[in-house]
Image (tube, rainbow, N blue to C red; front, side):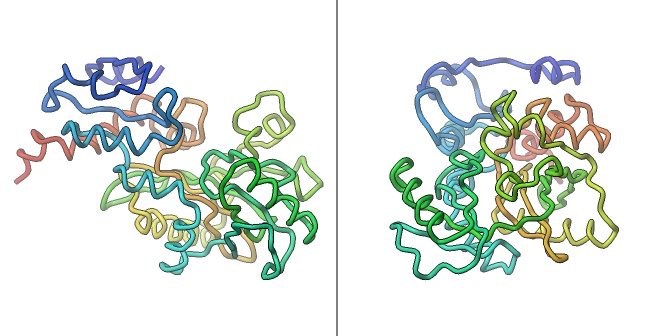
Length: 305
């Protein structure tokens, strides 16, 4: 659908199927000065967490491409480093700690949420991730350590309104209409979150009962506060062209949960929906991303005054 939408916008499109990890070989017959690569890659086949490698390969081959550079994509996988940077910039984010063992003597405050420290897309997040007491916390940290073989990130679980906010631009950054995840169908605090199933398992309770509200109903003050926090986080992380932020609201403060510099831009994803509310068709949204990337293409750079 992306190819069709871009062709309808007047872009000449060449599709290059990638069925293995040999990206360089697949692109070696294409002259970088004649193309802009629309980079919408989470992984190369058989290589998990390889989105940064894809961007790195495109840079080595001198292609202009959409989206963030490799160092930002790699950085975003490390939730611990992201949280440290948000703290350094005084950007609100839930209180947190990183655990490499099940010893939890220094954690106070419940409910809390336990996540694998090096994952995206809510991988490893279920209703059992929300814990209500030290015994549950110990059990869940142990589970993450044993199953994912990585540290566990423990956060204060903010039982409040959740927003997914897409932004795009470089220098001048625009916030698209915020989307709200409506958890009103759930009475149990442990259900009021976006799990992996809610994103990828049609028919699951969370997939079916979490409602997406666009645009999110916000007062003028809330909207300004949300935009200020999002713009600051976008710049702090170093996002380029576009990104999506997940936030929660508690007592007038928007807390950044996650910054995704390589979000889903499928027609049924929140960014496409919010772009449509802002007046962009799916093709126009994609075209805007290409135009942002084109500013880094040698020909367009040579035309600048």
